[in-house]
Image 1 (cartoon, helix red, strand yellow):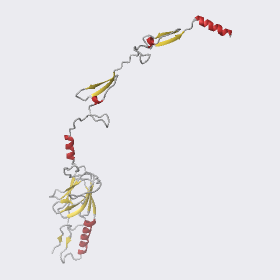
Image 2 (cartoon, one colour):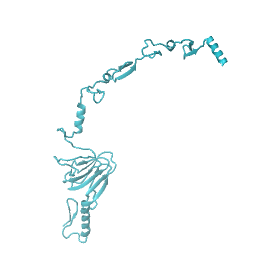
Image 3 (tube, helix red, strand yellow):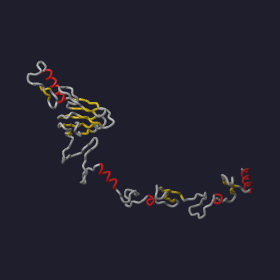
Image 4 (tube, one colour):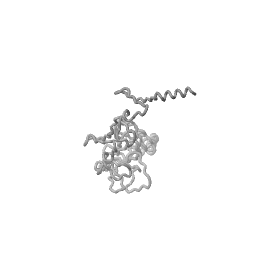
Length: 286
């Protein structure tokens, strides 16, 4: 009677009386295969889609281990097709892109890059049996920290539900806030309005709205004309130029120079001749 093959690990099932003097080596191969499937680790480098095949009675079949790590630098998502055999193993995808583990007839499980999960195959297709799948109606008390994307959310309905990306995008698109683009003067301002209404100008300033109805701007300008005239005091009613507002008194003369250019006003003092002679006489008598 010929030997047969086990269904899951393709071990040699020796028939009674067969493999005389060989059964020890065959048994060792089977034990190595069992140990590798139960506790073994294998790194599988990926460059694209890959199909794994197994041969009977081999202790080195690819992927017949307890823990597989996909490595590589994939530029796009890839698939790894396993034989349609009942199996369970853990997977770590470190290949740079999503990797789908499947059978030839199944759709499989897509594993995001950087993710570790447990997979099981019922002989037809793979499913994710990782404990990271939280059962429905599970309550978590406390903070939840997520490293990576949260996928598969259902649309929120209650006020405390999380929103999906689609719900958030729809809310933003539908938002039409009355009075949008209005401004407040401060945090306590109760009446929002447009900038040209909120910005007031005082004496000597003007404001002008430019490009009305388009990309508008607001120009502030001074209306004060600087003509070079001066006032003697704050209640002076008639401003005038310096040579008119500055008046020379007794023995004081004002001389304007560089007329029409960088003008200067020179103040000269003169002394009466009799006073000068008297002052000299007093000085000489001392």
